[in-house]
Structures are given as structure tokens and as C-alpha cells.
Image 1: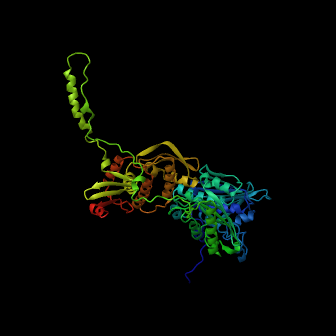
Image 2: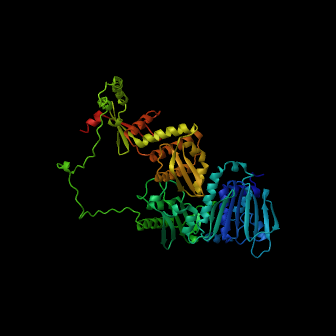
Image 3: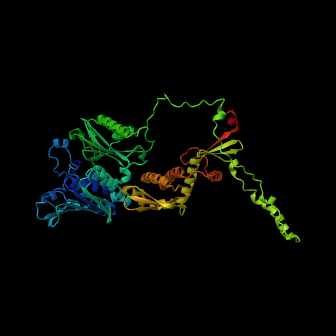
Length: 597
């Protein structure tokens, strides 16, 4: 007897579900796409416990007949394709007929659906072992899918789901990818009874982006358009100065279908070369209209990758289109090398002194000055015997000078250069301290200590700062509220897409502009996946926050603050290098100085 055997249908469906249904967001994606394909003008998405308990998608589309409602849970049951040639002409979201069968294999699914011409609706329940039961019910036109207890029969898959906020963030991402392409459709998303999105039918794509992502994104994007024989391009790209350190608002669509492409992403980034600093990414919403015969959307189980026949040509078209748009909007730097008629700068040599700027007068300080040394007893103007007790009191004041002996400023020993370096003499020469890196080491040590204690000191802002971050990123602050509070941040949610910064850790700047940049950097840090051991995760978070704090810190206001920074640095166990291994302190010897002269 051979060793091979055919798997039962239920087990085969569960294996297929592992490819199609990776998390609750996968179910939301598939059901929303089915609703759009059904011609719906309104789609409502309801989730409980980030999709673990319930995912419900209600639409007013064409609905299904009782027979089709039962058949839709069978694998490869589809109305989109009938022959191999149909695979070359796909313009709908779904076409393989795997989604509903895969979902029913790992969850309890109830479907209520009715066509406009039917007087009653049909209810179908798909449960264990592929059992499907149907009955007649009353329901409006359209379809209502309720998916309960996701992964109830695959506990290993359920165990590896992230926290509710993380899973909800993924649901918001999938919701956004579908809703953004169809501004003509009304969409809503409700989580645990709270409305996250209410998107009414929009006049244009830009208004839909505004409703989804907020005016802080729409205010920083410009239109992009190109028409060629290969592909038509439309959409929006972000201003270079609005590029962020996090990925999040980068979207490619082909014939209305969202897809990912590292290759085409490089085309966009190449167009932004020398306009944005390293490590940041601009926003873009790029829509491609292309002949469906020249693309293959069936190369990935979740249909998020697309193969193009002429990918190198499309690369060049996207690059040229983005580059031209940036130039047309005057985002590129302009350099004029024509010096004819320009003012000629003087050559400073022997006559240098006449061009020297007027020096700012420096106050002179006498540390040995004692105001009580000039004091003399005030004698009455009338003729009476002198009060010798008063004279004795004045004599005692001669000792008050000792109060001033140790209060000299360290300005003669500490010098700050352009807010970047502190220079101070040492026995062998001079010591140069990199201010930003010194702060990085100090903040890192403080955070490591804080994470193991009760928390950090919070510096309350005089005026709270509101920052619009979008629904998806606002969930990050809810997810990490305890960590941020321990680090000294006082950040509270406001509405569905905004946070209010009431306080920052001691030493951080409370200026509105710096707080806004701080929030952007916090999003970058909190968006990273930290799946390593707790100790390594703690060190990684501390290192990122230390780098953020060193940039965000206020400038040194005096030589006393500079000296205090040096003293704090050398109280560290490792004052010479940053957590990332960069040098903080350098000694320039007298011999090296001598070589300069």
C-alpha cells in the first residue's frame, strides 16, 4: 500500500486558510473586496476585540441567490473566471473563490443575503467540518457576513496574534487600502462600539485621502499625472520636506488594486535623491492604469504582489513622472553659476583689520570684589556719643566676603562651540566633548534605570500641543501608553486621529515645533517590531529614545549647564562612547596643538 493519501476537504481548507487568512485584518480585506465587487455603494465594517470575537461586513450590493449563498463556501467557487483565458483579463478584486472557504475553515461564519428581486433572504451558517446549513430569514438587499471566534479550532494560530491595538492597526491599514480606491462608496469602521471612520461618498480621490489620513497629509501632497502607451499614472506625491522616518503612507495601485513593490519604490526614491535626507521616506499615492493582459495578479496568495511584463519601462516612467512633478513644483534646489555682475568679495590679507567685525563687549568680573569692604558706619548728624555696638556689628561684616569665595563661574574653564562641542582644559591638553553624543549616553543610562524603576520625571508643557497623527498611528500611543508614561511622556488621545502632548521627559524641549517632530520620531520608534528577548528589546528601545532625546534637547544656556553636563557624563559607567559605539570624548594633547603652529 502506498504512503500517499488525499487530505480531507476540511484539512485542505485549513491549510489554504494559512495562506489567505493570516490575521483578522486578512478577513476584513477579503470581505470588503467582495462587497466592492458586488457593486455596493455602502460598506460597514464592525469588529470586536480587534477581530478575535467578531468581524462583520455589511453591504448593500447585489446579494446572492439561495443556491449561490451555499455554494460560495466551497473552494474555487467563483463567478469571475470560467477559462484560463479569463485570468488575463481580471479587473475585480476577488476571482479565485478561496477566501470564503478559507475563512469558514478557521471561524464560525454566518451569511445573510438577498437579491433585489427576491422577497426573502437566505441565512447560511458554515461550521465545523465544512457543514453548511441554510434557512429563510428577513434581511435587506445585499450581504451581511458575520465571522466569529477566529482561529477557534487552530489555537496555535490564535496564540500568535498580537495585542488588540496591534491587530486593530492592521485592520485599519487594510480598511484604508480598500476605501482609498473607491471615493464613490460610503465606508464605516466601528471597533468595540466606537466609530473610527465614517467616510461618506467623496467628490474626488483627494477628498477621500483627506477623510482617511487628515489634512496634515493632504496639505503636503501635490498631484502627479502622466499618460503613455504603456501605462497611465495619476495620484499624489509628498513634498520633500514632509518626508518621514517611518513607512506608512506609501501606496501603489494597479487598476484599483493595492500592491507592494520594492522595485517601483526604488523608482520613487531615486526621483527624490538629494532632496530628502537619508533615512526618511516621502508619502505617495500612485495609481497605475494598465492593460490587464500585461500584468499577472495571481502570483501571491493574498494578491498583494503583481508581475509586470514591462517592469523596467514602468520603472523609468514612474521615475520621470515623479522627478518632473518635483521640478514643476520648485521642490528641487536651484543653483545659478552665472557670476557676471555679482558683488566681488574683498580679499582679506594685509588689510584684514579694517574688515574685522565690531567685537561684542564682554563684561568684566572681579571675583575678589567684596561690597562690604567699603562699608562704613553711618554717623548721626547731631552731636551725641557714638554707639560702639553698631561699630562692632559693621566690623563683623568684614567676614561676609567668604560667602563669595566659591561662587565664581566656570566660564574660564569651559567653552561651548556653536552648541555642538564643549572644550575644557585637562592636564595633557584640552578635552573636546560632543554635546549631542554626551546627552545620548546620559539619556540612555537614565532610561535603562527608569525602565527598572517607578518612572521618569515629567516636564509639564505650559501649553499642551495637539498633533494629528492619523487613526492608525494614534493606536500606537494607546498600545504603548504604559511605556511612554514610565519614560516621562504625558500623551493622551484626542478624537480618532489626534494626540495631545501634555508633558515630556525632563530635559526635552516643549516648543511646539520640536514636540511635533518628537511625535513623528516616537511613531518611528513605536512602529518597529521588538520581538527579541526582553533585555535586548529594552536596550534597543532605550537606544532609540536616547538618540531621539539627544536631538530634541534644549540648547545649553550657560557655562554652568555645560559643566553640569560634563559632570553627569563622567558619572556614567561608560562616558567615552555612545550606546551605538560612537566616540563622545576626544583629548587633543599639547603636542598636537604645537604642530598647528
